[in-house]
Length: 369
Image 1 (cartoon, one colour):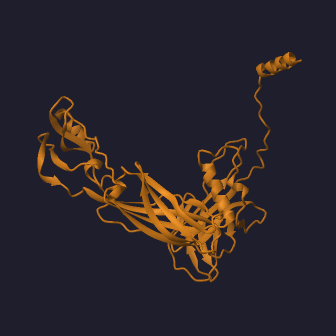
Image 2 (cartoon, rainbow, N blue to C red):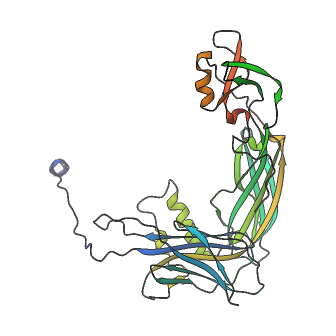
Image 3 (cartoon, rainbow, N blue to C red):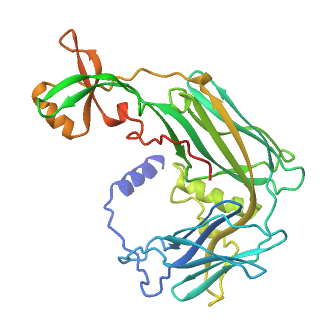
């Protein structure tokens, strides 16, 4: 009997497999609007609108981006207009009214979509931002406490400002007329030190509902000790705002599906309807969340005690016959280096090696938003 079963399985596995095309009703498919808005009072707010499409509608579709009008209003009648394009909108910082409620309006395809009226919630208090390091990384850690006022769920983001130096000091110049390299009268130190600023376009979702409203030393960010953030002065501004449990669930689904672990069988963000609706057609399905919250912020500064700068090896040796070609492509003679054939030569490097402005920096220290 066992032999018969095994033989049957082999025959089944080795039999021909014919392609199967499911019959799909192409006339009734319908895209749905998704509204994802993060209204942070006292800060620049972001709104993203997009379409949610069926997984397979059986025909070619142009995946267009919603275009329309977006604005925020409070219950006293004040309107704050959003600006943007390609489904991404921003509302600049505006005066906050105590006790006011807010709702978002999106007008797309001649239909009006609105959020519920939302009363802003207080964020957890940021009690500390500190730094630690191991042999290779620097860690930015945040502590916070909601004192029984929060929901147990929050989002966090940050901005960075730091001062860095170039890899090399330029000590030579190039004369196009004579195709020669010459030593400068003094090293060019005008663009050795610069400032850089970033504001990563993502946020961290934090679930602290099981720890009595107290979070201690949560690692929000890390960077290598060899990073140019460690050259002299590093500043970070951490922002935290409250989420409802439903908003946390929605954002966690987005996060999970956007990570490596997300796959075809992961829960879809569209499974959570959210707090938006179509005023023009109450039967139309709309997805996403509009979050309105006050924001807690705290700044911290790190000097260069964790610096582990690695001497670069990015200069190259160039034959005199190729000086002009390399110069026209953004290279310049920088300083002496060991030649591959013995002795020393003048090494050439790209602008970012000796000019911090060309490396994306600014001579003036920027400020946080």
